[in-house]
Length: 370
DNA sequence: AATGCGTGGGT
DNA sequence: TACCCAAGCAT
Image 1: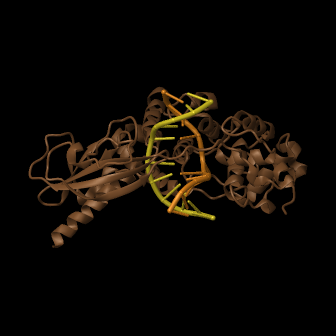
Image 2: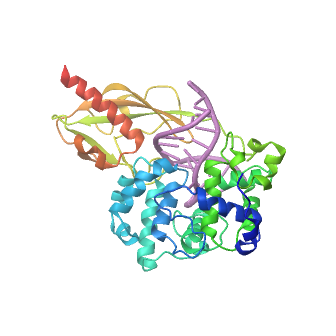
Image 3: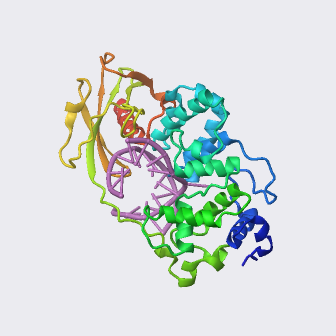
């Protein structure tokens, strides 16, 4: 077991637990693309707020593994907040495609423009001001303030909720228990290195204090952990029961031109599911799980032929999308554009639409081979 | 306060 | 298989 670093607790802050957390972080921090290495002295320069902000927005409800490639692509294409602000919203949403929760991409772009236009290209430095920007809430404002500006803001994400509810055996269900957790984090906060402390707590949650089979023997908080003492770690956090996922059905209409090299696409309305994203023309998604939608929901008439179905699970319902295909001779009198199949990657298609199009293309190619 | 909002990986 | 979960936010 790691030695507790009680001798530095006085210098580091009120809490011996915090000192143990920071000492653990100095040797066990995850190496991530948006991170500076741990700084035991607390004197190193702080990281670029733009990169911290961008990573935090991407990481909302999204795994590190999924974010890494997007973070690289965004920072190479838009190295500064001014560069991102200068982009069109459609470029940003296209680059975001596949990452999910697309309101994040719209808010990201809106936030970049606010920072560029209203703040002279510099992010506000306090959690309170950051929280006023689009896409930045309780967690993200505290995380940016702590990591990029050194403000001792109490950072509470899903990892830290798990760590802290176990540490203090907090039995109140989340999200109601959030204020209690935040108060506990504020109590634990060391007097220095607030950013490292927040990242350390998240790393402990992500690598040791995991939902199932936590590795308590490796945990720097083990001597302090009430749940470990009681042996009921996995009973925390308590969460409200989830509702059953309903099923929905819809239809997508893949129109190819006579060459077979182009498909007709359009943009969805900016609110609601996949808001502002590119799609194959699609029907409404019926809350009825029965009954085929048929060719009637198509945006224009054609010799629609049902070629299959794709399944896609969203957060709060499962969708079955019937896929219809047709070859048409003339450009539809309908909103949209012809997209070259070879360059679909640049269109920025959400995963559901990617699935539907892949099915349609496979069908189309099988027809040509006959 | 409860609900809507994506996706991919793990068990 | 059918869940559960991941650096939440907006309304």
